[in-house]
Amino acid sequence: MSYGRLVGSLALCLASCLAPATASAGPKKKPPPPAPPANSGVLVGTVSRVVDGDTLWLTVEGQGGPQVVVRVAGIDAPESCQAGGSEATAALNDLALGHKVTVRVVDRDDFGRTVGKVFDGAKDIGDRMVRDGQAWSIRFKYDRGPYVAEERMAHTFKRGLHAAGDAMEPLEFRRQHGPCNGADAKAPAANGAKPMALATRT
Image (cartoon, rainbow, N blue to C red):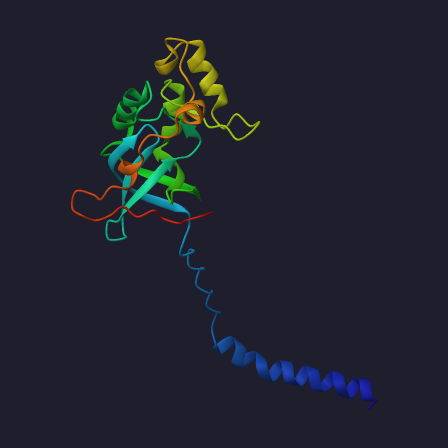
């Protein structure tokens, strides 16, 4: 018998010997699905307080109820001490206070606040604030922000802050007067627990 035939015969013999053992072992179990990442960049909770037209406190579910200060991404509402500030705060109160919302975290700002898009079901709270004329689409140098179309519509139809036609953008107000006292955003909660500025990034 040639060497090649000998090798082939040995291979066939091994295959036939191992086949029953493999069959008796049964089907292989599928590996368990990968665990979700510990930090998915999404927070779910109830809005416990509205600080101003673009800042709120969130009581997060499943984390012992920490208070997280959330800056609504994509919008810039009037400062609390600026004309229109109280109206913008009232508008965000109506849209979000006491509601269970989902926050898709995008960043953390210089004040340690979580920055995220806030949704009440399918409703984008930032979109509604700008569409109703209670906030501007936030500016990034030459970028007029994600809600510029909604802002133009609100301006055209003179909704909310644009009714008088002379509303000052918060960016310009801060440039001229500085920010209002931001103590409210960092004040302790009623039960004495301080809000947590979650350092989550996506």
